[in-house]
Amino acid sequence: METGNWVGRDLYNGRIVRIPNSIVLKGSVFNYSQGFQFVWDEIKVVFTTTSDCQFAREMLLRVAKEAIGEYLVAAESSWKAMSDIYESANPSLEPTVALVVDAGNLEFAVSYAVDYRKPTAMKDQLFTKIVHEVADSNGRLEWASSSVTPMNRMATPHPIEAHPASVAQRAGHADSH
Image 1: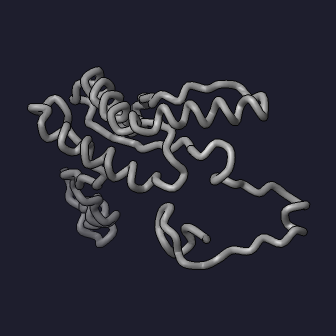
Image 2: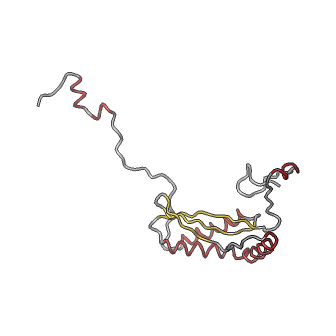
Image 3: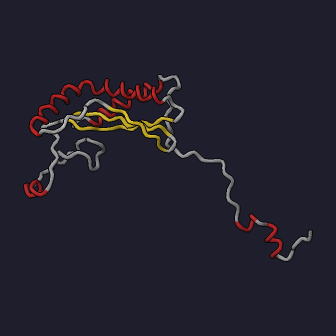
């Protein structure tokens, strides 16, 4: 069954997809339901630069480990079975947190392995817990605003209004000093 298209995220949209053999023989087909049944996903969490960076990193990692805990043993077992067949490298399946300073904000990327059928549910679980943690941080963490803040800037004057003396001179009313 197809996911996405007019339905957001990883939710089923109701259409059955048939893949002809000619397509299979011409390109890659990605099958998440066989072999390793987990995918890596990521959320971005943005705080102000006045937020406690180390506290934010520790909180995000703790929240991710708590949420992913139920998947981790199954993901490691699934990866071991798959890597024995395909002789692939063994990446860490533990959640990670990476920081980038972007547009004057602290942008954290939380990456984690999740059951291929449940990335939306996991994002909801993570963000719900993170919202509570930020609210309970006693001001150590502040959400960065993505809205545009208007500046108190003087309007640019019309060119004629910018130089009233030259307008008076052109009109023949030049003042003598």
